[in-house]
Each structure stands twice: as structure tokens, then as C-alpha cells.
Length: 267
Image (cartoon, rainbow, N blue to C red):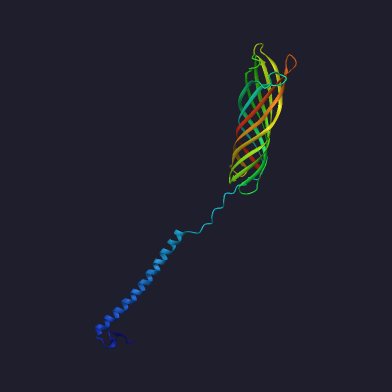
């Protein structure tokens, strides 16, 4: 094939010029081959490295969904605070005269059971029953009959409540309310003769409100902390006097419970 360089046919060139032209053409082809080989090497090296940096695409982690639906049993312990206010009651005169106040506290322990149903990711409704015992006793001087000391003792405490909770996965904040019962024993003690002057006992009915937080440790086990307030109002109790007869005293009672506990849910 005859090529032209600057308008001069290659065939008309001198042998030296022809040699230079042939070397120039060979050098051009060699450079093309070198570029192709270099590009291939870069692709073979950079490709796996880039793929390693990117890595395989991972599926997003599944959300930590915790269900509060189910029935449970559990136990708890804490402190019980009892306030009782005594006042004279008819036929005593004057009626309504404040005679003593006792502020008592002691250890409280109980068992509970109930059922929850989670209506949505955030809403939990439930019902719960509690039954517990405490040993709470306090006394104070009687300001009406000054020779007497008034004694209040609270032992059993029970409730049936509904619960409304806000769930955030394993965390559950809730409020509760319902009916409460307590058993009390009252007495007056004669400090001069060192004998019991009168006694009374009763089971009271009242209302309870509470709030708490619960955390699901595992699917079946949770722990909680809770505060409950019980109001048993004012009732007139007929005390049996040891020497005969009765003595009417109006007693108002409020209780507070602070407790921690655990629940086991059946699934």
C-alpha cells in the first residue's frame, strides 16, 4: 500500500526515510496496544477492590417488636404508708371533734394477676387483681379522753383495677384505677390501768388510682415500678368497750403504696 507524507509518495522516498516512516508507524501501534493493556490491568485491579468497598447489600434489620398481649401472674414488694384520722362521732358530744392522727408505714408485699390486650402498636388495655399484706401499726395520744392511747393497725390490702397503657416497644407506661379493700384493727389503750379500753375491726371499701412503668426483659418476663393511692373515706366504727357498752369513733383513712415487682406472661 502506498501512503503519502506531506504530498510525497512513500515509494519515492529514500531508503532511510522509508525506515523512519516504518518505525514511526510501529511505535504508534505499540502505544495503542500499551494503552489497551493498561486499561485492562486497571479494570482488573480496581474492579474487585471497588466491589469489596461497596460490599453486598444488606437487608434492613427487623424492628424490635414486643407484644404486651397475654395473661400474667407476678409478685411485688415495697412500702405501705397509712394515714388515719380519728374524731368523735354521735352520740358522743361534741361530734366531729378531732382526737388523734396516726401516720404509719411498713413493709408491704403482694401478688398480682391479670390480662393485657394490645389494640395497636401504642395502646394496651388490661385488667388486674392484687392481694397483699403489710404489718403497719401506729399509735398516738387521745386528745378527747386523755388517759387513752389510740392504736391503728392495717394488714391486708386488695384491689381490682383497669389499666390503660402507652407502649413503646418493650417500655409500657400505664395508669390504673378501680376498687380497693383493706382490713383494719383499731383499739384504745388505758395508760393508767395498762389495759385495753376498747377495740374495733372492719373491712373497708374505697377507690384506688395508680401509675407505673413496666419493661419487658424477655418475651415472658417483665419488671415494673408503681405508685398507688387508696382512699377509704370516713366511716364510723362502733368500738366494743371492755367494761361493757360501745364507743363510736369516726375514722378516715388514706393509703399510699410504692412497689417494684415482676410479671410472668403466659404465651
